[in-house]
Length: 368
Image 1: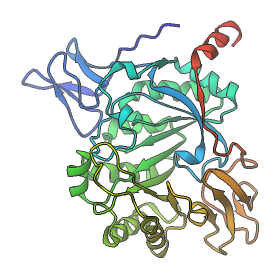
Image 2 (image 1 turned 120 degrees about the horizontal axis):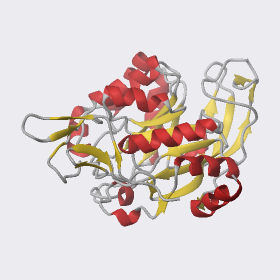
Image 3 (image 1 turned 90 degrees about the vertical axis):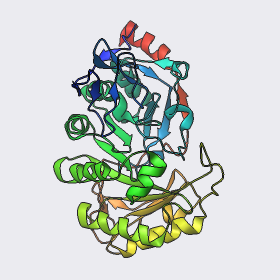
Image 4 (image 1 turned 135 degrees about the vertical axis):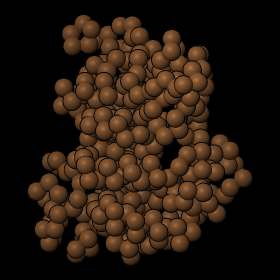
């Protein structure tokens, strides 16, 4: 099946000076004919903004859902994950820079129609498809089409995103998502401007929109970078805002930085920093706070906020304990654990399984 990789988009308008402005994200790239936006995948062609990478992917892989990270959404189950190329942020610390910073089409070595992705997830036994590795808001049209095809087959969809998107496309995008992990990269405008090339306020607006205007289950991740966003004061401010504006039930993941991309001279995050951040979050009322990218079975496990029972034990991505009943209640005291728990836990574990979709597409064409 041959896909048209260049498709029209809706979120743009013409400027008086002859340029065309992309209205997908707050970056508002204003382009002359033939130019690409900072994201690389949206460009001006024939006096309109188009998506140039529809159906193209940097590869497909089956991961544990906890790797997104999502600890309260169908724990232990496998998720079919994929990304494309490019990004609408410019994070100096990007951990997936080979994909998100790519300006080369040859990284997009795989391709698949939305229907093939949904069919593949069903055949492999995945209950979800995740848009990840780079930010799915930039391939807005493709992600939505994939989500619709997935929902037709009973497959849920997950967005791993920085949440840097304008209001109208945000409403359309999240209408088709069942869950999200949103990167709250820091809690200062200075960090967002100087380290990510973006701004904080639109991300906060996305988070409040998700909480108060959608049914999307979402969790937050903050990569703590030594000397940049890891002070007690900033973590205090961030976690208090989360509890006040989003409520105590939104899980927060504090994850370890390792030197990468343009921040090779910054040291890795000490585990003690993550543990301290988790403690601050809990003290400020966050009921589910986690450490990530380090081996910490305490910081990776889920506890009942009422009686303290370990509800879900985790050793990296392997579930070691399960003390939830009735799809989400503490076995000991009956308190509800916030999240999406449907049936028994999965047993996918820590496996990572690359998948080539061409053979699956061929099989679907024959009998699917």
